[in-house]
Length: 186
Length: 173
Image (cartoon, rainbow over the protein chains, first blue to last red):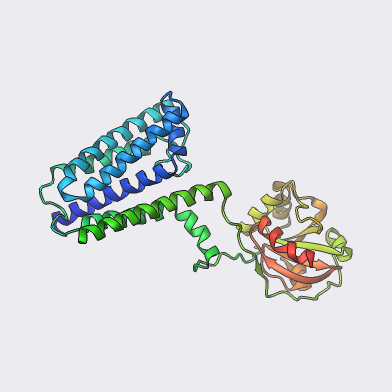
């Protein structure tokens, strides 16, 4: 793969994950707003508003990253988000906040903390790569960055909700692995 | 034109993610779907055992009874035994007892203690010999539905709630 391809893939990954996180938080802000409410002393409606603003920024950054002409703007927005996630994760780890992150609209069982610091740092690093990149990524292929972002967002959502898909799939008649048990008296 | 199509695909992707998020929230509130129950084919339907262990004797006379076949060495049986803890008679209207297959009686006793099963309703079936001979059952966890001591149907299950749902129509009929 060429350098431009790597950059194109990184761009689509970053934009797709941000789109997934933003849309999911916009749809279900309850879990993230609970974590924010524990982190900073704000009333619940204000915590929900903060989460909606973060979600809108994520979606905006994803859209900007998907348009080659606006990639630098998207990279800056993603870097700011990454720095914010890192700060929030650090503060939560230090203060031992128990609430789950709810980063992708799900409660999950992992609290806001070190994982968010790691994710934030990766986001900052990837944004810096895209900001200073000169290869142009997939800019030469019309529409490909947007299609890549869309594909990554859907696949990532499928991964986030994989347990639900595994559980409900067979109820809808999807093929599944046999889960029978055979008695063994040993 | 290609930009419009790409943008539409982005909107569709966002809609799919939103649907996932909403369904996921609903799923987390409602809980996972119960494991399905499967009819057990290997059993001898219509069979009535010649002899009953004393722990299971009341099933021989019960109008409606259910014998849960568990094993000390199957992971699903541990899950089922955990669900039976403190609510052994959760199958309303059925006399319930357990045939616990094991290779080692001490292991069976430990299993009964660990899951607080009522000792008087649990028959420790060493080697699974009795239940295999009496009903031809070699699968656990399974539920043998009895009427007046005679086997009428059998189900493989891994969740007691799913078993309750599956048995409700049987009882009504």
